[in-house]
Length: 127
Image 1 (cartoon, helix red, strand yellow):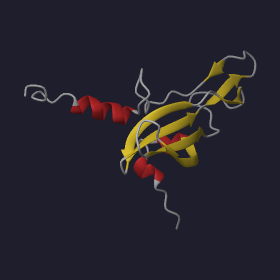
Image 2: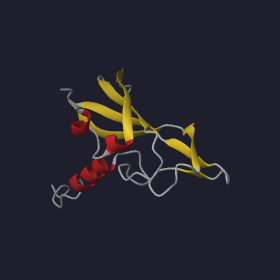
Image 3: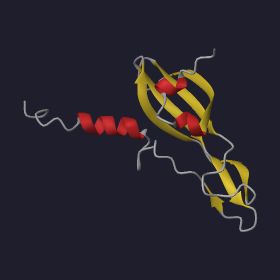
Image 4: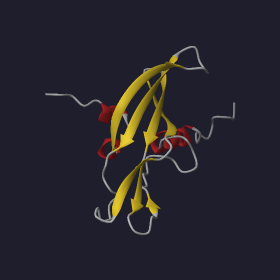
């Protein structure tokens, strides 16, 4: 039996839409430690509500790099490649909308929520 550990470390439901392509441990230029970079590609599945016969995959958009929770004290970055879908007749492009990226940031939604919550401690600055 093969164990899938990604679901325990990655944002909820991410692996339903993406597949892990590679995991790299790199030198972190901001710290005296290494960081982990997880590369993901969107699966070749048309977003819900669209007919497969009307759209075609046109490769990938420019990758997005977002920060997630650290693992074992190492910074973790997700490099996400989303598919580009184009209507065969109108040439209009569509893409999927995923809620795991916090709006207006380069953080996962879970990490953004966590950081917001830790900043709401009322007595934090009263000392």
